Image 1 (cartoon, rainbow, N blue to C red):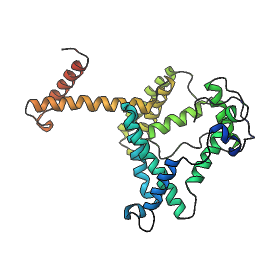
Image 2 (cartoon, rainbow, N blue to C red; image 1 turned 120 degrees about the vertical axis):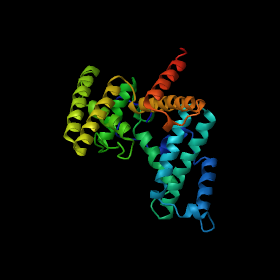
Image 3 (cartoon, helix red, strand yellow; image 1 turned 30 degrees about the vertical axis):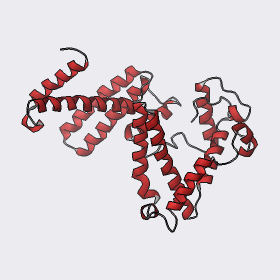
Image 4 (cartoon, rainbow, N blue to C red; image 1 turned 90 degrees about the horizontal axis):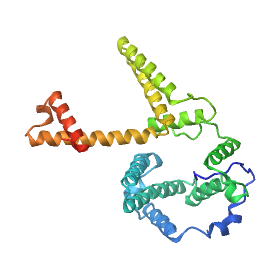
Length: 284
């Protein structure tokens, strides 16, 4: 989604061909067509056995893997890596489109046409004489246009998305219509309440109850991040990276002592953990 959408949705959308001169688009770019031809050849009679046997379902893990590798490249800030990983994601898109074409469903041109029409339809401030005062007005208009298209408030939040990310999206959408805590302070109170309920579930010994209450606690924590203007998924990735870095330091220090982790104990490893933390902060 473009971060600069409009405040007044126009439901009469110009045809894409009418704005092609504005977009400076006269057809598929040659590099994209060449790439599509390569994938078609790989899926052809004399193509690659691996590519020929792929289905939408079989490619699912690769699409997820490539998407996460692109995120890693973005986090690393490497333009070369970003370009490479974008290519791998594009490979997945084109391969899925070719698989669909092979079974007579749709093709890459259809994929491009659908997303192009959607971008034009949802950006009336750019293509239909609308206005865009600020990002908030843009988001409001985007939601109104989606509603006019018959999309529900929670439609489009992928069920297969990481649970933390999906929780934040669901809560954000609910909050957009007023179903929300007034401030972060109320969320902290909710976290305390949910923590107590986890303890009660633990005392009951019920796995189902513990899972329910743990989920409620995690959902509340995600909402605390949201109320603080933070992305909970990004915050947890940052903590994962920090833990990995620091625990790696602990393992390195144990190795310097000629020890394996299983030859140590919690007290020793905890002391080394604090030592690694001090070193990170430049303290001795």
